[in-house]
Length: 459
View 1 (cartoon, rainbow, N blue to C red):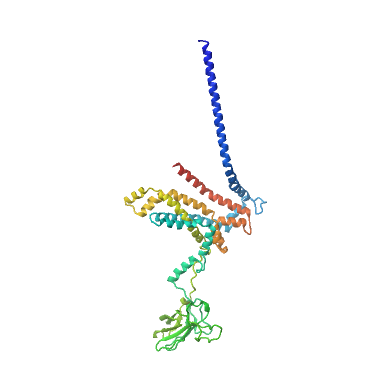
View 2 (cartoon, helix red, strand yellow):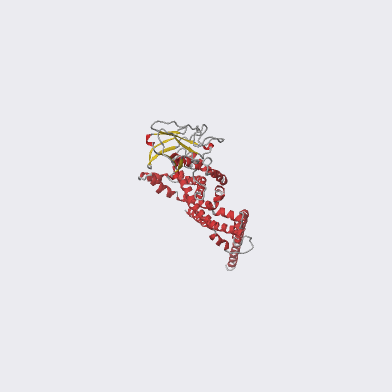
């Protein structure tokens, strides 16, 4: 009994040592496997980390470093470049325009995308419409800029926007065909108030009145213009002729209707007595006109409306409207992107909730405002944040669409960064400071986006 006890204790100790040795070997094996996994992961991550370091980290670090030096890169100026950003009028305009972009462009594109997604959800041709709206996303910014540079051309014969605008305007306020017409030398007409022309002396019934005008280029006359004819006297009526007192090739008599001179058809004539219009008419195709006996003893007036300059449309690319015009081009491109994402979110909305709201008596507007929009809030946030980040670095559209004369008025931070860093008077130090400022403005939006995605993932 006494001899067996030491042998049992020895066996227990040997077993414990063997177990400890096995556990140590297992731990070493697990540690080795973990090291191998880390090495494999590092081998796969290394190319990506190298690219991130070369293309992201190094440029950011170098830009921050370079922003602390002057134009040549030799003299350390500290925060001098950042102070210049705050005092340079051109850069301040770029900051202001960037703020306008951030407020208007993402909200407008998101709102249009929401409207398109909701309205086309139940129609059979909704897919075709979505395809058309999304199609501009396949066009590069450069191509879109060239397209809208033509769309916004001031000439109505070239620019679609002004062609439509002028067409609508002329429907309600027709412009004159004779904007350059004026009386010639020794004319019986004289200037009157408001741009009109009036006869120097009263006219009499039975004695044809002559109303000659000059200043209209023959090629500018309306198509179908006929040769002027001398008006015939009519008892008790005032007659006359309005014509272009100019003969091609020279010759002809002043203040007389010559055989080859052109009529000014459609021009308005008013008979004025004691400051009141007693009769009015328009010249016929041959320039002749007839007024009633009321015009006897009156002075004839050609109203200023006859000589109103043709409406040339809106200066879409002028200093005032250039930024909204370029934002319009951006919305045209990106509304389709917003529509597709919102449409995908709308397809995931439980139909039972919408039907329950309708059963409870809610109208379509109430369903949209109180049910659809709140359920789509996460998707709307994704679209809005994505577009905000995108517009803060907008460059191509502004550079291509805005003419050189108004680029200062349409300027944004990304364009100013390019002009400062690579323009004729390049200043890499100031350009690097603008780049850092742009990064600082984008980072909070990116952090918000990361926070939002993590919050969604925890749900």
